[in-house]
Image 1: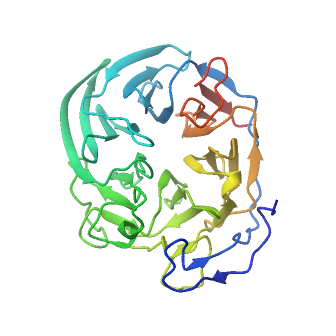
Image 2: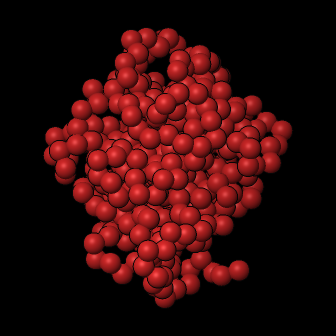
Length: 354
């Protein structure tokens, strides 16, 4: 097996090849940043969930958790009490689609889900354990059996960000008129945020399937992205940036595309949820079945990633920083049809940061 930290020579494939990107690049050279902290022993907060896809904390310290395949939204307390807020109307789980992202701002809850004809974003008002005043704020995001994106998060600028996939239709990623294969940035009403680079919802493009978003204390945005056959990625996101898919997978030589700051062999990662805490990005790995710690330098560069809990909990998908900043909540994804469920799966783990 090739080492994930071996720097590979960029190889250029024949132009017009439909089966693979025109350029395939190797592992991005690591920066000098090193981990400033290590995770402690996780404890199980909640168990017997079904594909917990996303976690968003409320102001009181409880968390909302989406269950992708049964379209259920649950509330989880730090003590482990789980309360169902019900199934979300209009969700039609299919393949990698279903009830996915959740984001919270004040008493408003935003959900990303797969409907009958598209992926869409809906806004609710939360009163106690009751959702009301449903309003679809974005619709027409391409849907498919694969690559539906689905992450939602509010940035430090106060705007809502959403990730979308190209649903296996590769050209969508480069089509700026399509919402597929993009990172979107919007107001709470679903309108393009002021300052968006193209005057539309599109913030960056050329993405295959982004499933993780996180900001560092300097306000820099990072995204985790599934590769195809060779390299998974973490990217430092710039407004208007073209991240290369399907022309490039991994590190390329075309200056028109933005290169990733981290790449892994796809067997080591399949990176999904991501959070920032204690000087590092923390990335849940599905196929890799581990939690990756990616130390960041003051300039936003990435040091050598460190694998945590390799094989201990199976497939890891949801990752969120707890309100105290001293722990992570991490969700397993062993009941998604690709894992090996254990007693108590799927579960939410609390991981202390030492």
